[in-house]
Each structure stands twice: as structure tokens, then as C-alpha cells.
Image 1: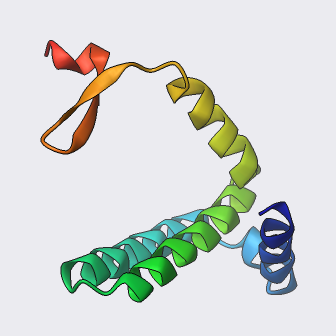
Image 2: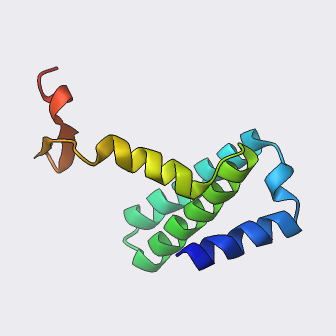
Length: 101
């Protein structure tokens, strides 16, 4: 995965995307998320895979634009959830702190 992420970063740098407006990249992320939702709604697993991949690429570039890395962001998020407890409610994991709300 690290090798692929490096390739994505190099691709972005070659096109100067790493210095572009992050707000535009956030809009691109919304577009890709919409495509993922459409793929799920139409039961198109291959398009869903493509959408997830597109979102990873967009997030990798967004992280670069914000002066961080996708790896650092994922590590921070994992540290936040690694010890989280909760339960599934209607197919959604609800963290323990939100169960009593």
C-alpha cells in the first residue's frame, strides 16, 4: 500500500495538484462519494471499488495540500478508535459514549 501511495503522491506532484486549492479537492471528494453511493444504489460492486479507490486518491492529494499525509491522518484516526467500545445498532456501530444519548 505504501508503494501505491507513493505513486499517487508522485502523480499529483507531476501535475502540481499538491499545491492546488484544497477546497476544490474537497468538492472532488464529494463528487467521488456521490459516485460510490450511486454504485451501491445500483448494486454495481466494480463501480463501488472504483469509487473507493478514487476517494483514496483524492484524500491522499487533499492531505498533501493541507501539509500532512494520508498515513498520518489514518494513524491519528486509528489511535482515536482503537480502544473504542460500542455495539451495532440497526447495522451501524455506535460508540459507547453515544449509546446513552
